[in-house]
Amino acid sequence: MKNLWIVNQYANTINMPGHTRQRDLAVFFTKRGYKVKIFASDFNLSKRKYYKKNKKFFFKSEIEEKINWIWLSCIKYKENNWLRYLNIFSFLINLLLNIFFRLLIRSENKPDVIIYSSPQLPAAIICLIISKFLKIPFIFEVRDLWPKVLIDIGHIREKSIIYRLLSYIESIIYKHSSCVVVLSKGCINHVTKLGARKVFFFPNGPDLKDFKYFPLPKEDKEFSVKRPFKIVYSGAHGRVNDLETIIKAAYLLEEYPIKFYLIGDGPEKTKIMRLALNSKNVFFDSSIPKKKMPKYLANFDAIIITLLGLELFKYGVSPNKLYDAYAIGRPVITNVIGNINDEVEKYNLGFTSTPGNPNDLAEAIKKLLKSTKSEREIMGRNARALAEKVYSREIINKKILRLLLDLLKK
Image (cartoon, rainbow, N blue to C red; front, side, top):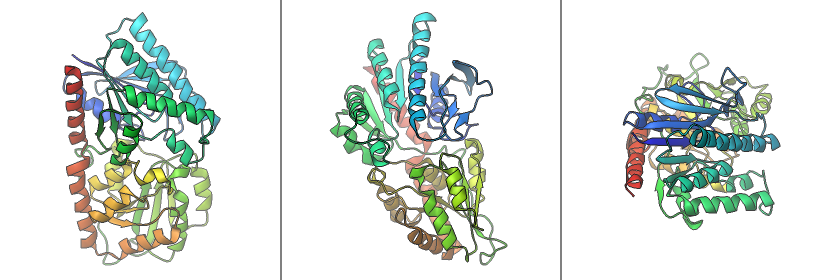
């Protein structure tokens, strides 16, 4: 029986809010006879709080869906300030001590492969060093392009020591990983330039057995106050998510029969709620577990995805919420210039706008509102077809399995 270690600080079970890419992969491998450990933080990114009931532990091991989850305690934070860096390094230290404890003190069987999922680079290079010491393959999965994204959103300066150090770590990881997996095709050029030798594109995507196709909700001949056009955003409430533009667009659309629902948590949520205080058509709710998401999203007529107009987002994002919308067959409204908007327009999946432009976003929403139901049904079916062809979690996991088998042969 092969042992697979997966490391991602923000990995979640199906009962937690947030992405479940590592859980989905682990379930896939356990069904094929692999023994899987996932090392993750007990501090949930979506809720910004400890998700486990017992908070007084250094690490905690539990079995769920035949996966051995290793929950590592970390320093908490609410906003993206200096406490976030302490959170990252507390995870690094706890991970290092936990691996040392398992391999040297408890003499557990070493892993046959380590898969590390970014963005945090310090813990990644530790896992790379451990893989070299154990003489096993190391797969580095790029979720976000650190440290580039930190420059783009203004958290650090390009000439700073932190940026130079992280850039050096990044290049070392790319050069010495057995292979690099990118979630966005646009990242291939970036990681190759920095020394990655074998690069594979395996995007995010939903489990289509969970995210089934749902017909559009029942509607009257026209949308009205009694039966409004319902749009949902579900995800992080951070600065990069550009939710201010949604709120400002909502104010512009108050005379139309449209309601906006913003579901999730994050450091900007209080600010966004204050901005929407006088709005009559914007509603908020907390994050919900991933397993409840398909049926929840099925209640809405459309799904909206927004991001800031950063250069990186033109090519370097793979938003789970977008592919969830594809899977259940919902038209989408996006303002993510580059690959995302291009895809939506190419396959007739909804309407697009430019980032940070409430007027443009409001116009895109009005176009969808004025579309006929049959036109929106075509968009939904196009989206489902693309999910089945490109973004199916089953298809992606099978490709990862073939990659892993090739690495183990060497």
